Image 1 (cartoon, rainbow, N blue to C red):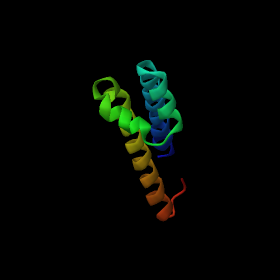
Image 2 (cartoon, helix red, strand yellow):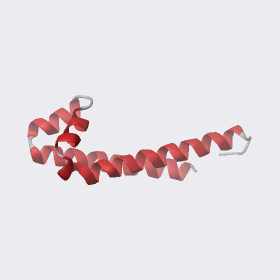
Image 3 (cartoon, rainbow, N blue to C red):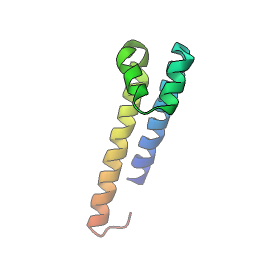
Image 4 (cartoon, rainbow, N blue to C red):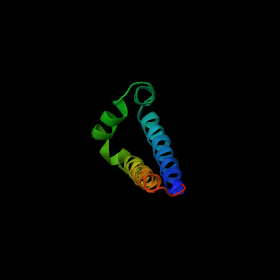
Length: 83
């Protein structure tokens, strides 16, 4: 389950970098805003859905994998099993 957690983190990171690249391609201001200001990347995704759909959905999939892996790790630790 640790592998699932780390795989989800890696997929999330790949999606985040890809989304930053898309934002910088649109304009330097979108890129800098997405990098430095919270929630600007979410606004960018909403306003530029066609361009940012794939990296955003990859990030969501990575977060889901992290959550599932963390949940499984927690349930295994609660049952006294070694993680």
